[in-house]
Amino acid sequence: MNNFDFRNPTRLVFGKGSIARLGELVPADRRIMLTFGGGSVKQNGVYDQVRKALGERATVEFWGIEPNPSVETLRKAVTLGREQQTDFLLAVGGGSVIDGTKLISAGLLYNGDPWELVLKGTADKTVPLGTVLTLPATGSEMNNGAVISRHETQEKYPFFSNYPVFSILDPETTFTLPPRQIACGLADTFVHVMEQYMTVPGVSRLMDRWAEGILSTLIEIAPRIREDGLNYDLMADFMLSATMGLNGFIAMGVPEDWTTHMIGHELTALHGLTHGATLAIVYPGTLRALREQKREKLLQYGQRVWNMTKGTEKERIDRAIEKTEEFFRSLGLATRLGEAGIGEETVREIERRFEERGVAFGEGGNVTGKTAAAILRNCR
Ligand code: NZQ
Ligand code: ZN
Image (cartoon, rainbow, N blue to C red; front, side, top):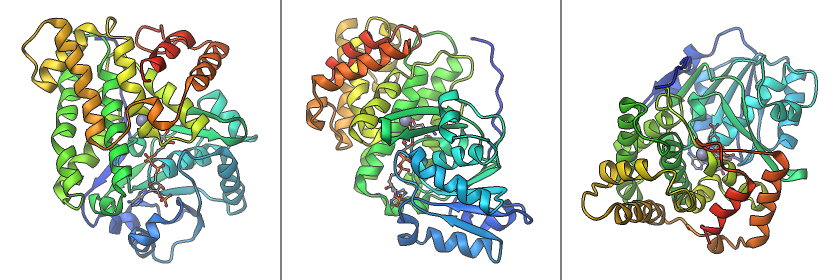
C-alpha cells in the first residue's frame, strides 16, 4: 500500500426529512447565497423545504447553473455574490450545481477571472459551502472536486477546491429524477469505483473489497431501481453508494486510473453529451484497449463481482468486459460512439488535444493522445 494522508471534513446528514435540519446546519449570522439549476427543485418541493427550513435568514438566490456548469454562467454568480457580500453558499441540486458552486466559492475570494482558477487546478481560499443533493452520481457532495466547462472554447477541466462543510442527502428528493438521469448516475457511480479499482492487484485488500462491495451493490439495485424508482430503500442505497464511490474512502493508498473520465470530459465538451453517457461508451473501450495492462485485476473483478470461475483466462477477461458493457446497456445507455453520432473526426481532435497538452493519464501514466485514440477506436 502507498503512503497516504486522509481527511474528509464533510458532515453527512442522511435520510427522509433531513432538509428541515438546514436551520441548525447553516451558521445563523451568515449572508447566504442559494444556488440552483434550471428549476427541478421547484417542481419536486425541495425548494419549498429549503425556504421553510431557512425561515427569515438573509439570503439571495442564483438560478440557472446548467448541466456541465459553465464559467460563463458562474462569473455572473460571483458578481452577484460580491455585491451581496455573501459569506456562505448553499448549493441545492445535482453535481452540476454543487460543482459550479465550488467555483463560485473560490471565485468570490479571488481577484481575477474564475477560469484562471480552473486552469490552475486548485484554489487556496474559499467561502464555506453546504449542499442539498438531489441527484446521486458525482460524489461532489463529499469531495473537493468540480468539473467546469468553458463554452466559447469547448473546454472542460477538473478543478479542486473545498469540501462542503455539510451535505444533506434525502433519498426522497430523487423520486422525481427522469429514468435517463438515474441511468447516467448509476453509470457514473460504477465508473468512479472502477477508476479507483481497475488498476493493479494486490495493493490493498481492504480497498479492493470496499470497491467490490459498491460495484456489487450497484449491480444488485440497478434493475430493481429501473422497475421501481420510488422505492426509498433502493434509492437510499444508490445515494450512499454514489457518495462512497468518490469521497476518498476507496482510494486510500491505491493507484488510480481516470483515463475514461478525461476522455469523457472531451466528448461532453465537444458534443454536449451527458457525463454518465460518455462513460458508458468509453469505459468498455478502455478495458478492451488496456486489457493486457489490467489483466490480473480484470480476472479478480470477473471472479468477485461477476462470479466467473470457469473458462480460460482469455475467456474470463472477454466475459468480464462484455458483462461491464451489458451492465451499461441494461441501464438503457448506448455503449458505442456511432450510436451517439460521433465519428473519426472527434477521435482525431481528442488525440490532437491530448498531444498538445502533453497528457499521460492512467495508473501507468501511459495514456497519451495516441492511446486515447486507440481507446476511442475500440468504442466504435
Ligand atoms: O437543473 P435542474 O433543473 O435542477 O435539473 C437537473 C439537470 O437537468 C436534473 N435534476 C437534478 N436533480 C433532479 C433533477 N431532475 C428531477 N429531479 C431531481 N431530483 O438533472 C439534470 C442533470 O443534473 P446534473 O447536476 O448535471 O447531473 P450530475 O449530478 O450527474 O452532474 C454532472 C456534472 O458533474 C460532473 C460532470 O462532469 C458533470 O459536469 N462531475 C463531477 C464530479 C465531482 N465533482 O467530483 C465527478 C464526476 O466524475 C463528474 O465529472
Ligand atoms: Zn464521473
